[in-house]
Length: 333
Image (cartoon, rainbow, N blue to C red):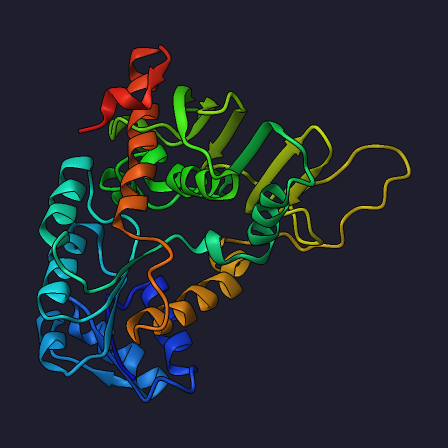
């Protein structure tokens, strides 16, 4: 297979390295809005560099991986589908709900597969939790808890164009909550605060948030988010049922320190960031994309899944601004 990669930043470079290591991939073509950056990544990995992102569509590709800036996602997805090139795109599909709906409407009549990058669906822990819920061995769920706690904030320039904590960060928790439980979120109540850098407030964003949710079967869920978890990168998920529970992310590198007397500390060190925590999951989702691109399996996470997670994020943002419970149905278009 000959694959293209649009975007040679941190995650794009990591994807390029992963793709180049697959036996089934005979060549990788890297492009970026900064040609020098694409050339540097290509030279480091011994792969090809294209003269600009548009050149990818003349490169005879069997699939395209999009890791470019968010504002480039809609056009690149549409270009790929129009060129009948299967596409993998990092979330989100677009920067907002209208943009996401526009892409979905534009590609609705095409049979070209589109896979969106929700890598937690490919993490072994989350997959085990989903299997435990589906098997019934947890009984009925009464509570679900999800956390995404970043150790340090991204740059101010990123925050200004990120879409906010719920859309940029919490969307992963919203997607995986739907995927593990098999349920939909009906109502949210979100609060957020700023105790860190001023640039969050300047962007109309928050650096820390908590969300209480009600799922469509009455299960209660909570999501905790922050940009300032100094102990390390902490992403966990707990499915708590009438017969048992399943906990994701409680391993030797979880940044948790018990103060109970006699408790043996986790050996650590804590995960420094998302790439280290989810490296196997990123590889697994790209390996799955090879099967999607080859027509061996349907897309495991399509644009409609990204839209559903975005609806939840939008409801959270409305709830935070207006300080009230918001039903997800209120923000549907």
